[in-house]
Image (cartoon, rainbow, N blue to C red; front, side):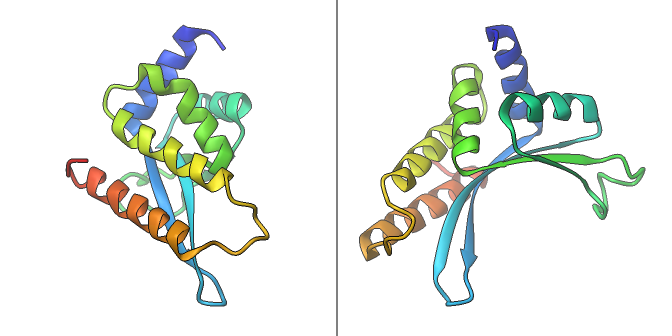
Length: 144
């Protein structure tokens, strides 16, 4: 992909996008963490271009009390490795979310080092929890 396209997508993501670490409790009351990136907007063709370039899923938002009064809001979502790859590609062009992006890449790289079928150690879960809290603090205007 050309640099000008990546720069455009980075600007769009800086303004309309979201990076977060999702925390979920499983049926066995275990906690899992996952990286998620999203862009929500009414311009479906741009989101479609992002999906074609980076993968992920597109869905129409049904109920959003402020942003979806005309029923035209769409969300493009990436998770885990695809989210990391997207963030890595646009990172040189980010101006606002670059600190969140750095944390997201480190988070996902740490997850890549553990095998799916091997239970996580208490230490690795503590690291993921700390990264989850740090990402929340960044979103609330906190410092790293």
